[in-house]
Image 1 (cartoon, rainbow, N blue to C red):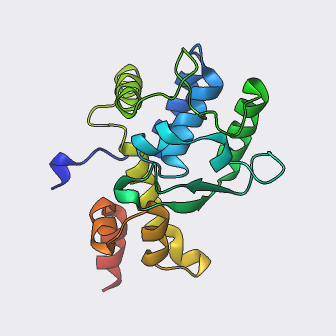
Image 2 (tube, one colour):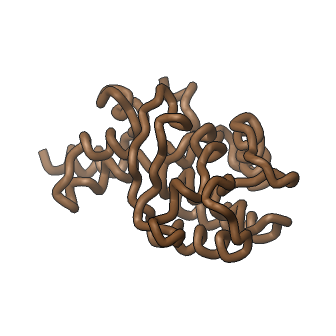
Length: 193
C-alpha cells in the first residue's frame, strides 16, 4: 500500500518548500497553498474551493477556524479546522495584499478566479519537481498533517478520533491508512520490551 501513497514530507523539506515559494511571482498565495495542505490537512479540491468567508470571523478578519463547508469537501464531509498560527499569519498577509470580499476565493488563478482542483494538483506537482522531491503529490502535505497529528494528539489529551474529524474522514480506518509508521519509534518500542 505504501508504494501507492504520496510520500510524507519532512520538516526540513517543508522549510525548503517555503523558501522555494518565496522566489515565485505569487509568494503570499503560494505560501498559503503549502500551509493549507500541511497545517490544515486540506485536499486539493478543498484548497481550490475555499473562500474568505470560510476563513474569516463576523468582523471580516481571519478567524480562529477554517470552515470547510460540505460543498467543497470530499463526499460532502465538511468540518471546522482550527487555524495554525503560521497559517493564520500567512492568511493575514494574503488578505492584506488582496483586500477580498467574503465570497472571493482565497487561492486565485492569474485571472482572479478560483483555481480548479486539477490546477492545484499540477501546481503541487511542479513545486515538488522543482524541489527535487520524488514521490510527493498534492496529498503529501495532508499525509504529513494526519501522521503528525496522530503522533502528537495524546499530548493534548485527544484521540485518533480527533484526527479523523480534522481530516474529514467518515471512517477511522481511512485515517489510519494515512498514518505512516516511525522506524525510530518502533526501534525504541522494541528496546523497551
